[in-house]
Image (cartoon, rainbow, N blue to C red):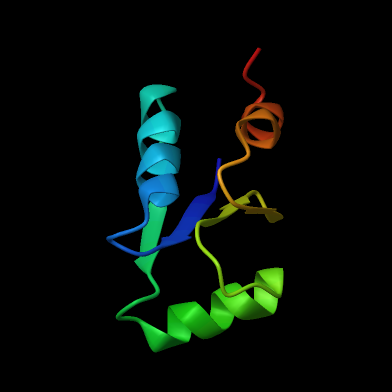
Length: 77
């Protein structure tokens, strides 16, 4: 499972998404777009959005903390 989370340190939905994914036993690679301009550019290119979190699971882009979509892509019942 390849999971990337584009976030900022002050974003409450980012914290919820990271906590939720971790609680389900999955690891992820985190990108802080407030300090990493290349990650920010990559996030915008992937999602067309400036808002965080942007979560990418096996190439599928999720904008925001969409628990149902995360569950679907992680095959959580």
